[in-house]
View 1 (spheres, helix red, strand yellow):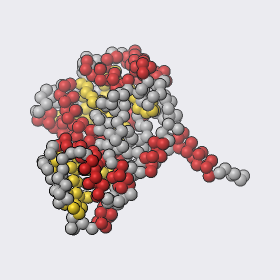
View 2 (spheres, rainbow, N blue to C red):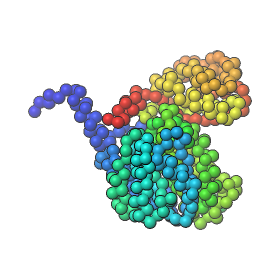
View 3 (spheres, rainbow, N blue to C red):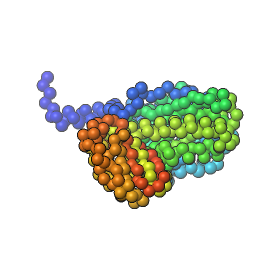
View 4 (tube, one colour):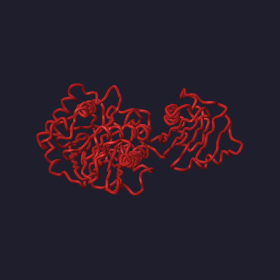
Length: 435
C-alpha cells in the first residue's frame, strides 16, 4: 500500500511518538556506566508510581519514608516566586524534630508554582493524605514539585496513589525514585559513597534531577541525599549550606533560576558510629569531605545533562580580589551566550572570555590578565601569548570536557564554576516544552 503522507506529516507523527513514549537521546556527556549502584541507607525506603500528572506510561511521583530519629536539613531557591511546596518545606524545617518518621513526596510534570491559594491547598491535601496513610505528622512531611509553572496541580491524582506508594516502599528502589522526578532530563543522576568514620562504616546515597532552568541561587533543581550517620540537626544544616555554595551554587546551564529548587538531606542515625556533635571534629570533617564529593558529583551531572549540551566546561578564576569576586567573574563567563555558543561551535574565541571578565564589573588588571585553554597559555600580560597558535586552540575545543583558567592579576581570590555549551537543541527543547 502506497504511503502518501508528506515529510511534514511523518515528522509530526515521529514527534508524537517520541512524546508519548518519552524517547530522548541521552546526553553525550552522561556517565558511561549509567546510574550507579547506591549503598542501602538503613532507615530509608523509596517507592514510585505513575499518576499521569503530565506524562503517560511512566512513573511521575515518588515517596520516601525515613525512620524516626532522623535529622533533616535543606536549602531552597531564593526566587521571589517560590512554589507552594518550597514555602511549606522552609516553614516545616524550622520546627521539625526527630520525634517522628519523615516523608518526602515529589511529583514531576507540574511545578505547583504561581498557582496562588490553590497551590497551598494542593500541598495541604497531599500532606494530609500521607499523614493518614503513613501515620506521620504533617509537619514531618515534605513535598516538591517540578515541571510547568502556572498550572494547577491535580493533587487528587497523587492522593489516589499514596496507598500504592506505601505498599511499594523498598530500601532498594532509589533508582526508580530518581527516574520518577525527571522532566527534560535525559538520564537519572545518582551518587553514593561507603566509608569509615573512626573505623565505623557510614554510607551516603543521593540523586538529583535537573537539566534546564539551572542557575545558582541555592541548590538549582531537586536533590535528595540520605546518610546513616548520626549527627545533630543544626550541624547537618551548617555543613550542607557550606558545601552547597561550592557545588550546586557553582553551576549554571542557562542563567535561569527555578521557582522550585530544593535540596533536602536526611541523616537516619542508623550507623553504629558515635553521634557527631562538633562541626569541626575529625569525624565531622571526614563526613563533610565525603558529602562534598557526592554533592560535587551530582551537581556536575546536572550540568552534563544541560538541555542540548555537547560540551562540559570548568572555569577556574584565580588572582581576584576575593573568592566572591572570582565567582562573579566565573559566572559572567559561564552565563555568556557568546561564550557558550563558541563552545558549541568549537571556536577558541578567547576574546569572548576577555569580554566576560570585563562585563562582570569586578576588579581586574587588563595588562596582567592571563588565559589558558586547558594547559595551553592563550593570553598573558593583557595580550595574546607569543607561544599561542590558533590551531592549538581549535584542536583543544574538539574535546567534550573543557577547562578555561583566567588569572585576573589583582589578588589571591579564586573560585571554580561549571557550565555547558548552548546548542540548537536547547532552543528546540524549550520552544517545544509545553507542547
